[in-house]
Image 1 (cartoon, helix red, strand yellow):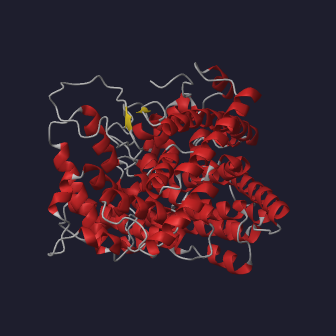
Image 2 (image 1 turned 180 degrees about the horizontal axis):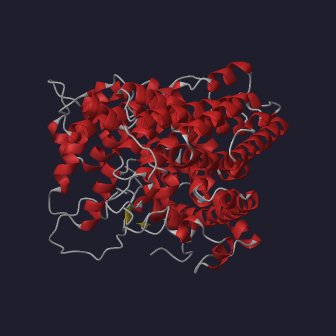
Image 3 (image 1 turned 90 degrees about the vertical axis):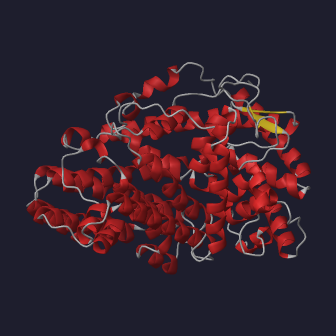
Length: 583
């Protein structure tokens, strides 16, 4: 849980009766307030969200004009806070608190050097027993921050909080701040770390007990948000928006940090709006929406994946380039799932495998148009990567598209036959058909880090970091209560395959099994991000961000809506942060 010194959230909800217990208000504890989740129409059918005309961005009420003076003021505030950070960071405990605040407000890209410097010192101190290790909150916060940055801190640091029977000490149930940070830390577990599994169970049970008590609404909300949206499995920029207007404190540095984060949010929001305009114009000029009337026309939804996975504002061109292959994943998926016949799909797959436009003569016109767009986009991105980084990725990208189409074809044949595969076989193919490998291999080359034969061979063969992320997406998607876009095409799920294979099993039991599989996939992903491997930290973060994006993109409600995603999109792209004094 975020801890700002002498800071608390100001709840936007009116205070309730004063005789109710308030554990969190006016304390040192701060956490992300839950965003309202009001059901609306599905993102796929909300024309304003999916296909917002570019000219609308400049006319949203309250959006500040990003002038040169505004940017200068932002730069001055940034330098001011960097000086504060250097001073406060000398204190080990306060340094952790400040890093947590910076990361939760989504502005850590400005402070990476300072964060690395503080955490390097913290890691060295932890290795030499030079830190306080008796405070649960501090130990758990240090553990989480270090692991997030790739330092493998052993889970044994929590052993001292256990009793003689090996259970967490009962008196810890009274430490609400420690419980929340322990729960946050448990999200970074890897396979085999039983103590972190027990930490998660212990802290969640204790926090739920607090939830059952008569608390003020603010305290209830902070505990609920900790349990529902732990930091490691959430997108900081998606959750930071609410922090910017609901934080108050007596500590001077949090006020300076909040004002800096407000300005930064509006600057980055303006950048994202410009990127959406460029993507919208590209998609319109491409003409696929007119040529392929059956296909989805959702450039904004496709861009959200790029915005979520590549969060650094400096990666603007990479986000725009990445959105292009993402759009084709959706279009080709529609061809296989909704429109194409099995014979046509087989011919299309053969054409992609050969990557020969001449072999498309037997294809219907809509498939020829799609293949040409695929070829043009692949060549365009390959040329850019070669020009900027000296490596031509065209063979790797073509191979990845061929692999994806083969997986799509396998599914088409399964469902055309009316026979479901074994659950294991379905999942192995589904990891590929998720499209995650296509997205991440493009990210790898667009980032341009570690481009050599060894690393490229690794990325070509769907390594663990990618397959773990894809497993999370596939299983989350299959747990969804509605089909994406309510399509009428062929569909199936791991749950269906598992239930057919295990006759008599209850659907709720299967869903629990799948949830456990998702948890294990997260542990494998954590391990890959912590291991010394060939992938850069930005690439690892992109992999994590895709996994974090999945619940937003696939959490349908009973009305087949995506309320969480819709709310966050509205906040990030349309609603600016007021630049007035603290509320």
